[in-house]
Amino acid sequence: MDREPVTLIATVRNEAASIDRLLDSVLAGTRQPDEIVIADGGSSDGTFERLEARAAADPRIRAVLAPGNRSVGRNAAIRAARSPIIACTDAGVEVEPQWLERITRPFERDPETGFVAGFYEPAGTTWFERAAGVISAPRLSEVDPRRFLPSTRSVAFRRSAWERAGGFDESLSHNEDTPFALALKRMGTPFVFEPEARVRWRPRGDLRSFYRQHRRFGFGDGESRVQGWFYATLAAKYALGAALALLGVSIRAAWWVLAAGAAAFVVGQARRGAGRVGILEAVVAVPSLKIVYDTAYLTGYLRGRLSPRPSSPASPLPGPGSPPVSD
Image 1 (cartoon, rainbow, N blue to C red):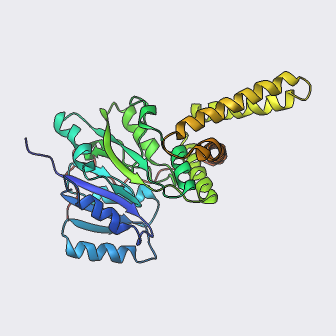
Image 2 (image 1 turned 180 degrees about the vertical axis):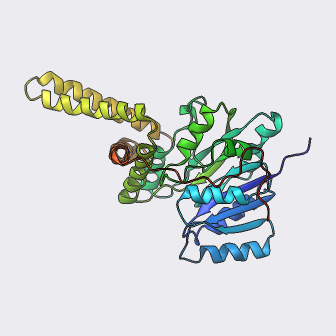
Image 3 (image 1 turned 90 degrees about the vertical axis):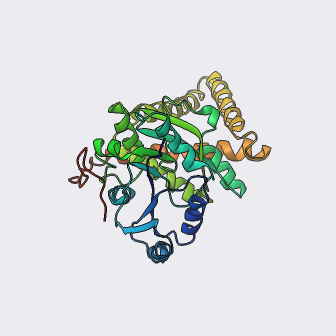
């Protein structure tokens, strides 16, 4: 059976130092995309010029200017794509050699497949990056395919599904992939989880950037009003801890309960890090970063939730059934 054409898209901004690694890893794959469309969100470091040079040397590569947030860039890249299947990854990522072959295979097995979620693995080099990777990405064994909301680091979908969903919401400044995936699920789009379709990414390397990144993710969830149950549960856990700490002033047993809960928390987080980081990192760094991670998400979500709901601009997407945009 003939394979359907596939376009690889990504959005970039100031990625001159990493864009070649991304393109080289894609082009070294066991399946190569029929075209690559990279949307530049307004780089000032020569990224777009580097993309133009790569495009001049390889007609499969195309660069488009799309100033704005990542949703704007993703939609612009997809509108410029000529293929019925879109594979998506992010700047700063290196794809494994079989990634594209594996993430598009479900479309070949079942033409009804509308969305394929791949997997992503952290590739930290410092102790901080390794610990941050444990917190920022689940183990494969922790993933429930029925509930998994994929990152656009490693996904593929039919262009027709993107059209039906109205594209990525361009009013959202952060974490736009979660509302997009939820919209597709609400529409009944057939999802497939393909755990062997993997990419590698490097976590943030210092505490400030780690906190700010996850606060932005939380803000995006609050801004788009999604996953409220998750944040309510997370906030309740910390509220319970604070209540036990206060109650312990008069009832000492509350402190023992709090200590037992804290020990269980440390053990649970250390187990997540087992085999991925050293023992000291697993026992000290991973639980500490988990608290920073949770705080960042909660404060970001609260700020986003309290902000006015952004209104979506009129969508420039082609309607369902329209042909892909071509030059």
